[in-house]
Length: 180
Image (cartoon, rainbow, N blue to C red; front, side, top):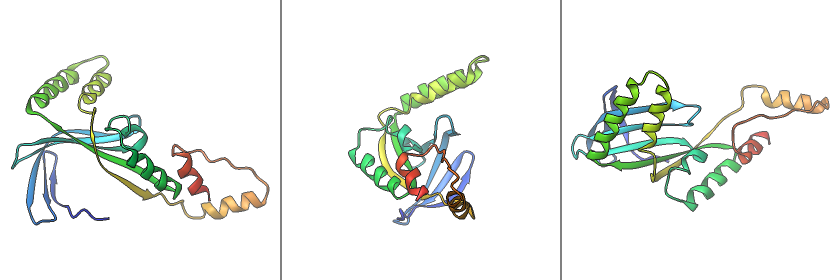
């Protein structure tokens, strides 16, 4: 599916988009939360230059995101359907942030970055401030294709009566879909 947004320009402090209705929008990048395999998500805090509205966007593993978004039966059902097709799923969510909350966040983040011992834990705790009661925007799914010859290799091993185990961090439904 297409949403019609086109990235026009991206710098460390700004991004510009063309919207489906022909608008040109610019956003200030206030903070980035880089992807972490431990957290299994990433995010960005943006301020719309036209409206001054501040929004925090996060994408991550649906299992982690489900703890941070408002309850959604639709998400659970859709993620299950996509996983049974062997697709890897991600959830995208957002949260509007008031100017006051942003100022508190920015000050707390500045202080957390100055900590000498336990800095990573302090920064992580500050980021958690923004990640409650988020609104689900969408669920995405990608096909994670096997590398060349993996299927044939597994078939030869099976024909030779060699037992194999699949170790994955995916949902059981996704692993079963890939295994078939």
